[in-house]
Image (tube, rainbow, N blue to C red):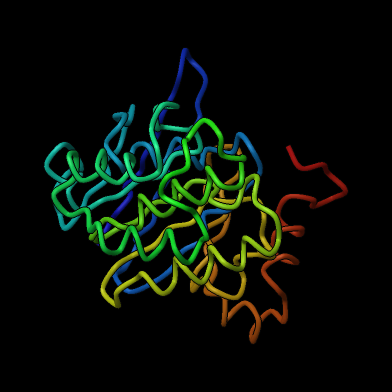
Length: 235
């Protein structure tokens, strides 16, 4: 279980997160939704213990996240994080050196599903291929919580379906998956709960099935309602 308790974060006097509180449960897939600049990436970096909150805390199984929790929390950033001279096979060796829970067999299986030959150099990859490689490396870890920041950026529609299937089939029932995105339609069929964040504040947390049955809305319709209310523009 991962708990975000009144988490705030400021940079140079600007508040990026403001009292963010919610709980993530094992065995569920969450969508962390909001336009660019809403605070999604900042929260993920805090949960991965790459930064510290200005106020509040994030707890993993009752313990504040830190170096000791990184073994169970796998984070995939939006930024590229492989050296250009590496081959895809080198990326697997690199991850195996850093993470005891990295599974080379799972990595190779994911590469095969994503049609990524291991002899390709990182510097030759298209943006879509590089995105698939990041996902394969992250999901090859045997973590308890996966935080994927904008996993579908730069990936065409067909490849998104391929990646979604690879992500879902590599999950075990007890893990938690959080997908940060502003591409809402791609997430509706796979997530259990959506967390909407706007200007650093949690504005809504919705069970997807309840959203359909109680409000009669799709995830995309709820997104538009929140971020385009009163004729406003998405920021």
